Each structure stands twice: as C-alpha cells, then as structure tokens.
Image 1 (tube, rainbow, N blue to C red):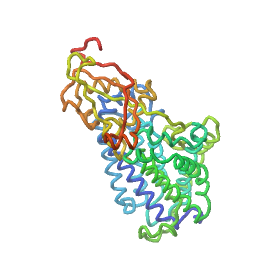
Image 2: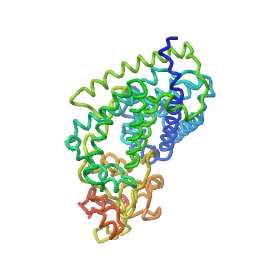
Image 3: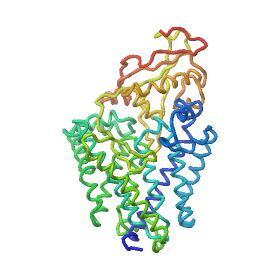
Image 4: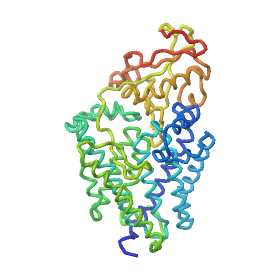
Length: 479
C-alpha cells in the first residue's frame, strides 16, 4: 500500500469529523420525525405522494419510490436516528471495518431518500452539504486503521468549495459586499435572527465594515491556506472555526455552521489536536479498503469538474449540483442582502363576519419574528423548516403560493399536526371562522425605543398578503 494513502497524524481529526457528522445526522433525522407529517406527509402542505406521481427515481432517487406511507417515513427516519446515535456513540469503531462502512452508507441512503422527496422544505444548501460530507465520512475507516489521506483531502476540498463559493457569490452578487455595507442590513433582515442579532445590528458602522472585510478574507483567501503544509493549514482551519462560531452567535442557520466547523477539523493534525482524545495507534489500510478509497477519490475528482467550472463562471450558481445524489455540489450563501424586513403574519378570528372590525388574533411561530415583544430565540443547529419558508414568502410570492393557502386551510381546520409546528395557537385547538395573511414591515427597535417600550421589534402594517378565507362549509365572499 503506498505511503501517501495513509495519514496516521490525523487520527484525532477523523474522530472529531465522524462524531460531529453523526451529531448532525441525529439532528437532521430528529427534525424529519418531528416536522414531516404536516409539511410533506400524506396530508401535508406539499404531500410526498403527489410529488412522487410527477417525478422519477432517476431524477429524485429515493426509497419512497417503492412505496410511501407516513408510517414508512417514520420508520425510515427512526432507523436513521438510531443508526446516527450509534455512530455518535462510537459504534463504527467497534464494528468490523466493512460493517462500519455499511452503517454510514445506510445513514446516507436514508437521508438522501428523505431529502429527495422533501421538495421546497429541503431545498437548502446544508442538506446537500450533509449528504456530501456524510458520503465522504463513510470511507474514513475505524480507529485502528490509519485515516485515508485522500478522503481527508476531499473533506478539505469540500470545505474549500463551501467557503470560496460563498465568497465568490458575494463579490459577484450584491454591491453592498463590495462597498462593505451589507452588514448594515443583514443582522436585521437575515431569515431567522437570534437573541444577539439586535445587538450585532446596532454595532457601530465601522465594525460592520470590519466584519465584511474579515468575511472576505476568510472566504476568499483563507481557503487556499488549507492546502499548505502544517502548521499553516491548522491555523487556516482555526480561522474558519472562529468565523463560523461568530456566525452561530449572530443568527440561526440550521446546521450549516456546525457542518462547516466539522469540515475544518479535517485540516488539523494531531500535533495541534491530539490532546482532545486518547486513541489507539492506527495500523495500515487493508488492501481492499485502499482500493475502495482510491475508487471514491477518482469518482469525487471527476465530480469536482463542474463545481470548478461553476465557480470560474461569471454566472455562478449558488447551492447547486448536477447529480441527483447531491455529490459534487457548488455552494454559496447570501449573494444578495435584503435592505428591509417584511414578514407575513397569520391571523384568525371567531367572528362570523370576518371583517376588519372583528377581533383578529395572531398565530405565533417558534422562530420567525412575530410578537414585537418576544426576543428572537436561539435554535441552530435545529432547523425550523416552516419558519424558514415563511421568510421567503414575501421575497418569492410565487413559491409560497404552492403551500401557504393550504397552510391557511389547515389553520381553519385546527389541524393538530400543523398547530404543533407553531408556538402559539390563539384559539387553543378550536377552529376559527376566518383566517388571513397580512404583510408587515419589521425593524429592530432603537436603544431608546427598547428602553421605553420593552419591544425588540417595531412593525407597521403594509396590507393584506392573502385575503381572509373561511371554512368551506360556511364560506361567503371575503371582506
């Protein structure tokens, strides 16, 4: 076996990467179990059976092409969760090497099957990132075998695509990234602000300029340093970890930041990381495993051609790929930044008239801004899919038409699974007579407003987003 195939000095890096990827799988399958039924279940807002009827296995490979039911989905997600917990507990270091590879492979197939039928609810870059990272982790081996160097390099290459792709899309996208003003807006207008986002928003403008400049350095310069000899690669990886920690502290981006931190550890050797955990001295790679590693490396290098061409193109695509199995993707985020925050607020009333004089009560969401007096919560790395899509609704009304009217109908029915996605049901499980969607403009309160009112947000009504609608049994013309 060639010496270049083994990287014994990265045993701790492998241990960290495997355990963090397993943790993200745990979160992802937990989210799937908790939220799938009202979103993509048989009576979901965009039902999987309806989606499967208009697609093919070739376009969207998934176990659910064989058969779909909500019960089967629960089984798939539950098995995935159990296997992810086993991997997190170190089962792949106890099992034979081949069995450990099989465990990681099953995890990947199960989550791929969910993502490929998840439709708009799973259309986020971190889904593909988890699948690509999970695929590579499958071939990292167990503790008593030296980490395969090509797989570690592929993980670093994946990190490069995440960071450098994001940096390029910013420079090519919004002018505010070039004049260093994007963070004058972003902390306030990002999809799901966190508890510290208001603090970051009110930082002095020169600090915002410094934040943007540091972001450019981290995403456009530091990724190249990851491929240099130690200790430069480890220092570059640490810069990525610190930067991603900054993003975690200022907003909610599901498990994107955690996965990016995970990939950064693949570039840190035992000289810097060995203190973290005591591991056995790894032995050589078995011949059959070396052959598998080489085959996977050749495959991933071939799939890397398109991401390179995409990043080099003036028409760079963000969070896109050419394979239906989410390998060889191009990544990026926030190529443009919105300057003002608009929110769709859902309301209901028991008044049969349903007019503007009725007492309208607001439904509360778990993550997205609603009640101006509620501090934005910290959710990441957990993912609230409905709340994220509600942020997109004012930005892409055509996209929201596919599910938002159905959401209003589910509220009219007081559908229990749908109500469980919310933080507050103003009718305590009873059916309202009418519901409606209204559009508000939100901004963070100033320091003076916060002291005077105690509110985190100031909002003003812009108008109706969707007109009031009533239950079919008693529907009359909307006011």
